[in-house]
Image (tube, rainbow, N blue to C red; front, top):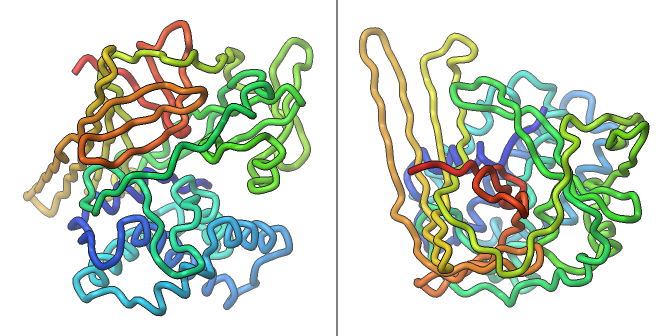
Length: 361
């Protein structure tokens, strides 16, 4: 079972936008994750409790995201009534996710910690002031320039290539969809299964120290590319094609969109929600980032459909090493890990590990 970051974005996008003050969007999104985890963790402790493996995974996640500091910040800085009401509504929707409801609460709590959207990093430093972060598309937040991009140059000589694996995720209507995601193969025989961590910079050793749970090993056996699973066995990857890193200064051209969803149609219900994010790149270095969300619900003979498209944010982009760097006209910026076929970018590209399909319009 895997809860995707798209599910968190989808739920937030389908509720009223959080206000920018007094809590930042980064803090609110992290609070949604932590409070969801706390809900299932409390239920877990009331039943069998975490086993040793689960406890290690939970502790590693809490340390990596500095969850203790976030909990302290939330305790010392209560949300105003409007924000609290919106957060409570989002929490109720996340907790009702069918995948989590069907799971044992201990397994559900661990699944929350493993979701890409739960790797939010440190959002409140030791002095308690929120850390500035890039906002997700379509949500209203105060913008601020990001820190200088992390240096990924030390990683480049250690990289062999990028391969691709598959996993299940929730799709539109609550149906389970197949997600194709990239895996970084190091020349040392190690592999990183969450490429978003690459944006932190440093070398392989430092990444492995911070995110050991996302590392495994890879090999070629009988001419087939294989990756080692958690139980120690070896799995032949469903795709045997690998990509090299992209050349610096690569130009992209076209509209690339990532779609996620949820709902209960898959289990006989009548509700479906869809969210999407997109980037429109021009070869001259311009980019517009947008997105939106829509829903449909039926009751008796009545059907209600809603849609909300967010205003695009314009800026300029460049590809530098492993990183797609964007500087927006509003003064904010972001950096994302970009993976694509260096010989043909007019198909699917992966941004922070999420697939974006090129569309005609």
